[in-house]
Image 1: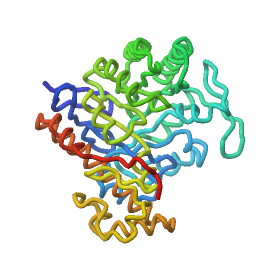
Image 2: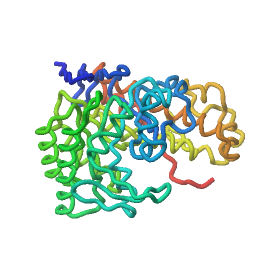
Image 3: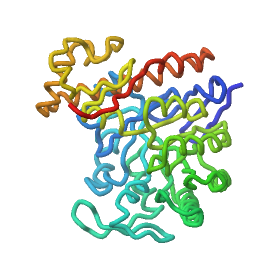
Length: 379
């Protein structure tokens, strides 16, 4: 039976399930998103090297915008005065804005965290800055994203249970302040914290549900723990998240991570991996990962993936991409990013179809049967 969540300008409908995996429909102010969905990162107001039209051509449904960096440069006031982030970057499909918490975590050597917020030095010019739940909500409101994230603290890894609980409770306090101060039109998601301690994650989820959010995310992962540790935790957390709300796993990950996450019941993912790997010459294909910098591709006339229909594979050879990468040509990064994002969007579309057809287990086996990842980075 389908489950439905209707809140403000967001509607989420779970259309079909295959085990714990869900195929859904997320309706937002700037369009409909079919889930499960992968969102590329538009950190500075763009997905590096790609135009909005190119993103649409590869099937991207939704982007992630970086609140922290857009606040510092050019500033939320300027973006708001120019029509909001959608108009500013000419992306008229849905956008999710993060809260800035993870970026503060990445700058922890420059930051001082207290129970009311974070004080830190700008990584750009050294200015003393202050970010609080209320400030994060104000910034995101002016950016105008379709989905807004509550301000949270990304806990360091590894850390003791006592330290993690203190950090988690601080994030829960900030979540309540975020909910109380947010006055925007977009949906507001809470973020489950608690490190690798399942009981802390359960406590965090209970607090967030008591506050009440439009969707629920799992944060604080992919910060140094092993994939085995991460998925052991997710096994206990995801099934207990509200069925009627979207579930979002932040900062994950590889193609196999996406499949495993979907099998547990996750609906939304984001990661820099497809575009960052593309810029470093790692290309995802139906048979595994191609490292285009390897000398064996210098005179290879074939496409990156014979089973791929993206413009890169339709028109350009491995030899050409090898040359572009070796020469550091911007076109090479663009063409390889197009391919990797096409791979990800096609993978998610096929996962969705498999859920609707109730044959996800067979799809997983077929997709990764013989799939190879290079063990050496040598040229």
